[in-house]
Amino acid sequence: MESKTGNPGEILPLEDEILANLDYPRQLEQLYQINKKAFKKAFNRLYPDIREKPMVPYWHERLNFENGDLSWGNSKEWTFILVAAFLAGLVAKIPDFSWLDQDFFYPRNLGFIVFPFLSAYFVWKQKLAPKTFLPLLAVILGSAGYINLLPDNPESDTLILACIHLPLLLWAVLGISFVGGDRNNPYRRLDFLRYNGDLLVMTTIIGIAGALLTGVTIGLFELIDLKIEELYFHYFGIWGLAAAPILGNYLIQINPQLVKNVSPVIAQVFTPLVLAMLTIYLVAVIYTGKDPFNDREFLLIFNALLIGVMAIILFSIAESSKNGGNGQRMMLFALSGVTILINGIALSAILFRISEWGITPNRLAVLGGNLLMLINLLLVSYRLLKTIRNKTEAETVEKSIASYLPVYVLWALVVTFIFPVLFGFK
Image 1: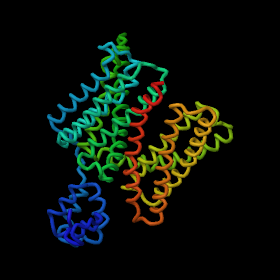
Image 2: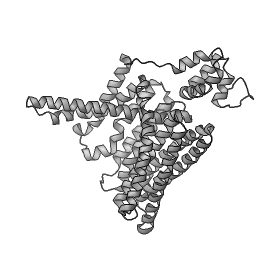
Image 3: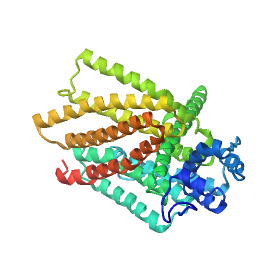
Image 4: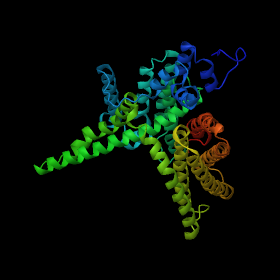
């Protein structure tokens, strides 16, 4: 969009765009609609210096108004949610009314129980054009057909790897549905990361409430000598598990105030705790003499720990970019440094195993994943260091995260679709 100042066609930083268009309500509204969260963040930074301008008090109240009332949506939206939850439960119950065995079905199709229906919500809610959502539908259907046509060999490493990495592709489909037409907008990608944190919190709350309800229900029926555990889990438990994230998604969309203050607190509390845990863990590994170079099971656990910490770092940075201060960024920088050390150990261990015993699908997948995470960590750490020295560099951290997300998806595509063929489905 062309601003009222600057050279024609020049793309200005968002804060400069706001300053340039303070006297032009239509242009200001267009800036707000492009990215509401980024606009609010930039406007609030400018507010102390522009509060005397005529339109500024109105925008300040509009952007920072807090509605404490809980919204339950309308009947049309609830109809969509109930249908989506029912269909998700129906997908989860496919082994009960088909020839498919549970051991065959669930490892291959776990991601299809939830992700397509969450994606459908955003497609429906944002009224995405067919040219946007039809390719996404083709990816979902094509992936479902592909994963279920792979040879039924439980011992196949490439099958297990495909089952592990396919949900990442479905997660990317959800992300594209979430951002809609702004798929190249780094701020919308960060919004998607924050959305994942909010969804996890809300789904966990619903899950805890469901577990309490289950315990009370089963206990009450036991008092009258009726054992309903098997019946309850068979007909209600599966549907409840499938419906929890769909319901959680809907609640945070219509009531963003429910968890918007919880996720940043979790990020700020867990960052120092994870940093302390990792430091103590590394000391304990040295003390106990555990050897990731020759102990395969320990190396797998080591890499699982690395993936979990990497996810915490990305989520925490996404939250701190919106709410955190310099102290939080320094803590994240320290956590990134310790994680780089762990990544280096895991990477050297897998390279040692490849040099000693050759390449296997598992070793190549772990090697590729570790390399990608190491590069990402180095980029993030470099940007965090620049941010600590110069707060105006904060947006570069956000962009370094947002721009790297497709790399993980590309690797997931390679492992899911190329590895089985490359290694002869072994």
